Length: 130
Image (cartoon, rainbow, N blue to C red; front, side, top):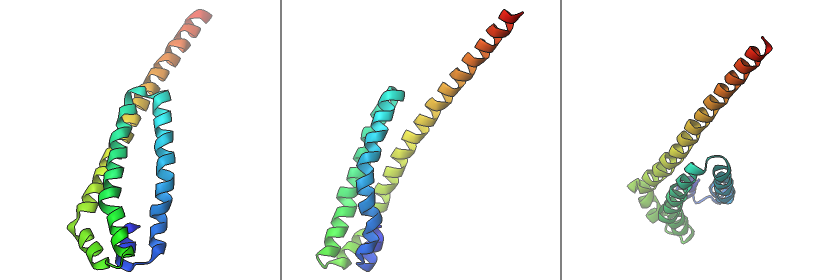
């Protein structure tokens, strides 16, 4: 990732980051679409995740990559050592965890409602058969 690139200046370390950039927009679009279709009340959780990702990228990843690319690796290492990037990425994880937790809670409610409906249908079917 970015930290590996900063420490080594080896561009191969940027491959996961670059792949993540490509996948990020597709994943966020798919998440927005799924939430809009299945859990519209949770749709508002996507914007904070996008914001956290953008803040991490703009404040950490891009500046560090640019510093190394410009031959100022020591400055990039100093940025890594501040811990700011790690804290911002922790915010990304926490935001995505909130989305996941909310989706899981909604799925549990939906599952319980489905089980309840099946139980009622079974009861009606049994009573009707008698």
